[in-house]
Image 1 (cartoon, rainbow, N blue to C red):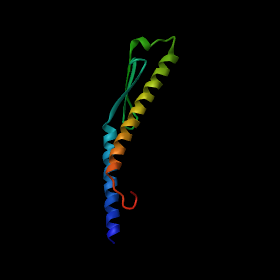
Image 2: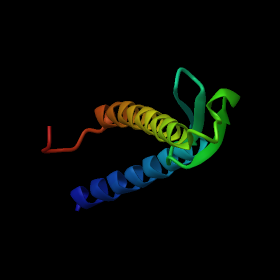
Image 3: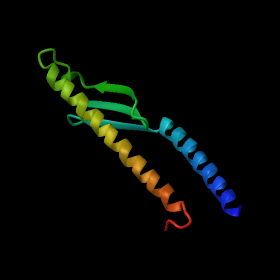
Image 4: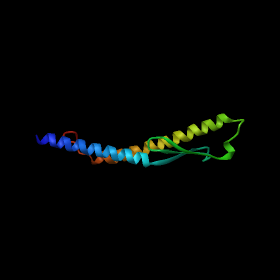
Length: 103
């Protein structure tokens, strides 16, 4: 039953890593921007929007569409940065995992 003990240990380690990753994602802060920095958004690692900064020049009641596009672009920029950080983090974690019979 040695294999079962190893499996339980591996499951426990995976759960601990998952809990640590969730905490790190909640604490992560990433800024995305668009319009040369005229719109900047801050999101956490779960892609929850935390803050918006708007340059007064982009706030034009006659061109709301442009502002909306800039906000969407800034959010997409921030989301891509979160994905990149997560990918980097998971790649580093995966490199340390040795699964018997898998590699």
